[in-house]
Picture: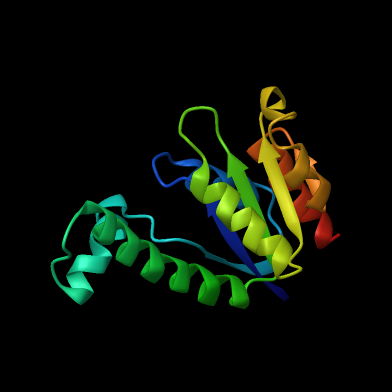
Length: 149
């Protein structure tokens, strides 16, 4: 049995990570897959700066301190990863996904970019860095499964 660590990059407001894990499980891959990623609890992610460093002088610094700690987590988790799956959904702003995908390419990590075709033009520069671009989470799971064939 092989091991693979996948960083799941993207927004934390929907259940896309659970859906991807379910698709991968359904395919019955003969490997141990560990999933890592950003803090998935939205409140904890937003509040971590003040929770650790104390009250900040305003919302800008509150967000900045939280962002710094979240970026540290992102870097550590990505350094553990063999592969990044970056999901660009249609419902939420995707700033975090773009940051994660950009970091993955800077770290020379293989990137599976999942995006709805309607975002093809907006994501053309990231798509140029991706190892593969797919339209659905099911397709992303099939790409992961193919690695182990």
